[in-house]
Length: 164
Image (tube, rainbow, N blue to C red; front, top):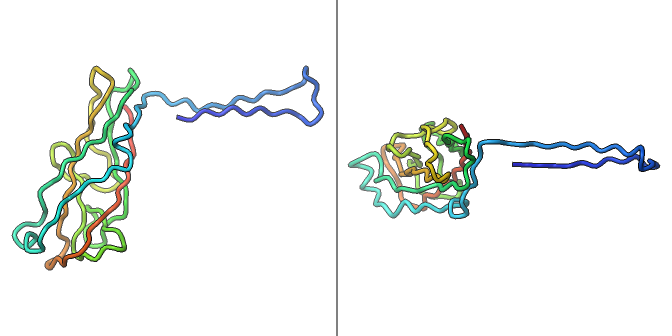
């Protein structure tokens, strides 16, 4: 939410001739993102490259985005995850440039463990009666090629909230 008030006064204005311009941006239906959900770190664990020969993805790791103080008119929230898309699979998020692991990327899953595509909205998460909301998601590594090579495998994903 952003509010701004601009007071504009001419260089030689009398008090009776002062102009006041008020500008505001009022946004309804919002929640606060809890501090524990800002800049959150999700540890996907340590995996041997041989794990990707037997199955395409690692076990999903749960993470939660906590929202508080939701407006009483907010009925639900959808989340969109954005980040760099993997060059081999556009349904996944690319690892950061400095990482040495190859043929692997990161998938984000909703609370039902269905894959969320980069840039597309999630399912609707309804707001509870206490005006707080815990949005459960999962992340996992997914192989993007025949041979996964070891090394660091980090990624960065941003989220945007759509209030309904």
